[in-house]
Structures are given as structure tokens and as C-alpha cells.
Length: 119
Image (cartoon, rainbow, N blue to C red):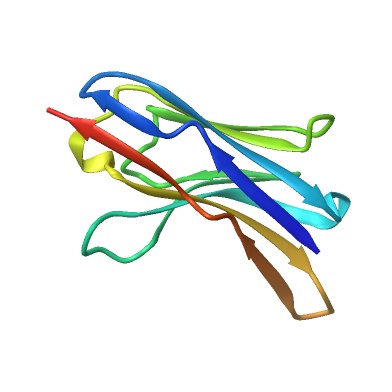
């Protein structure tokens, strides 16, 4: 089992920065991919950035502005968000994927942290 707790959200002006943190606990060694999703009001949840041992993926909308990183000692993943725009306003969720079998996996989700960007 994996537990995920996000923090670092808040209200910022356009052009500002925030750093989100996701603290993982439990069977953290079993996490093969971890990252961030977001859900804006009235929108579907979308991928923001993920990190694994082999790759880092970013949504096109955040590439060049956001940076995802992982601290294995602290069992924490970060999302550094720069040049924030109002369209980045959303609840940001931490997600971790664990392989459970030859062709299956299990997803774990944090509770979310609100990011609001004002113009």
C-alpha cells in the first residue's frame, strides 16, 4: 500500500511560481512511476508530469515551465511550477503506479492540493 499527501498549493499571480510536494509512505520501493495530474473546474483530470527510472513525461501545456523531480531519500516527488498562468488553475493530484502482476498495475492517489492563478 502507498499513501500520498500533497502540499504546497495556494494562490499566486500570473507569472508566479509554486512548488508542490507529494510525500509518499508505505511500500514506496514498489512505486515504478509517480507524478502529477490536475483537474480544472468543469474539466477532466489530465496528466501534468510523471517520472520513472527511465523517463520523464510532461504535458505539452506545461513543458518548459514545470519541472518534476523525485527525492528517493525523502520519498517525495516535487513539481516546480514557474510562469504560472490562469489556465493552470486546478486541483493538483499526486499519483503513483505500482506493478501488481505481469500485465496489471495499481494506482494510488493523493487528496489533492488547490492551485489558483489570478490574472
